[in-house]
Image 1: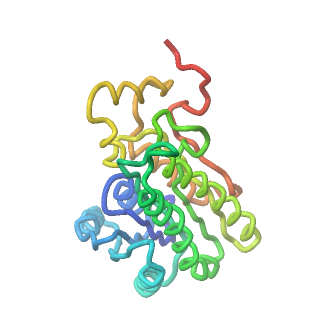
Image 2: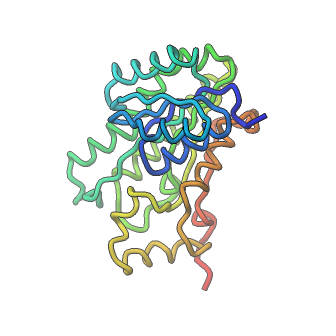
Length: 256
C-alpha cells in the first residue's frame, strides 16, 4: 500500500519548482492530485499520467476566492472529495528589502499571495476537508519565520511568520474535527524563487556560510517532509512547524 492511497491532494503553485516535485511525488505515492497554478499545467498532468498516476489541472489565482472555490469544486467533481490541501503558492520579490527600502506595492503583493491567498485556499477547502473526516493542511512557511534573514526581505519574512501563526490557529480550532494543520519550513532550496538571489559567487557564498551542512537543500528533500505531513504517519501531529533547513536554526555559529 502506497503512503497516500485514498488521499486527494490539491496543491497550489504546482506548475514548477517544489510544487511540481510535490505533485509528481504525491501521485507516485497513490494520491489523486489537483495541480493548481495561475495557468493550467497540462505538462505536469501528463507527466503524472505517464507514471501511472491520476491528476487534473486547474487555473486559479490564490488571491481570488471565486477562482479558488471553483478549483475546490472541480476537485470534488473529479475525485469525489478532498483530504489534503498543500498551500505551496508564494512569492518572493526582488525589491523586498529593509523597513525603509521595501516598496509598499511589494509589501502588499507579498501579503496578498503569501498570507491572504493561503487563507482563501483554507476557507474554500475547509468544508470538503472536514467532510473527509481525516484531513491535512500543509502550509509552506520558511525557516526565516523563526529568525531574521541574513539578507533583508522584510515582507517575505513577515508573511511567513503570519503563515506559522495562522497554521497554529487553524490546528487548534479544528483539532477535534478530524483535521490537522502543520507548517513546512524549508531552508534555502535551489528553486527559481531563490536563484535570483544567487546571481554571483559572492551572493551564493554569503548564504552558504550560514548553513551548517554547507549546501543548499533540494526540492525533493522538502517534499519528503510534506509527504510525511500529508500521510497518516503524522496522525498525532498538528499545529507544528517542520523545519528542514540543513541546521540553520540550530546554529549559533557555523562550523569552520
